[in-house]
Image (cartoon, rainbow, N blue to C red):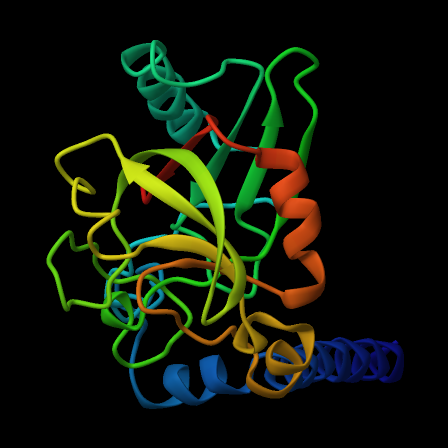
Length: 235
């Protein structure tokens, strides 16, 4: 009887030691703490993650597309069409989104009857982008600025100049009223060609003119013609 009692006692002790050993393998740190001191409510407090580092706020650039004119730009262009409607034809127009980089197709030809659009790449002036980043930084209407001017233009007559066949423009707003005197025109240029884009990642810069790839110029003239509105802005 005593032997059975001793065996049973030994089994219970072995089982108890086994459970303690298993617990120490699963939570070794807890066992170590318990061996040194009793657990307190501080030990049971939830662990919180450290705060994420603050990042400098970066103003987002407008999302542009070669297939659609952004609504805010379209509203401004249509307001310009209404404002100057007695000086321009109302069948089609062009809208230039200078919020887009020069490697994007940002000169949008709009058929006002069907709503269809076609887009091309166009250069901006060196005075609008002194560091040649591809982004237009500022507009100017000042003589000698070599900058692009913001506002509504009406296309005028064709002529042959240093860039070959070109088209004169009249500025209709105070922001581009000097366009004719500054010789701000539409023309073709080698620095607007696709090989420049491939080598530099952006187009070259004009002296404020709307410069297109040389092989696209004829189609630009066909789509515009004289008496059409061009609205150029960065919104």
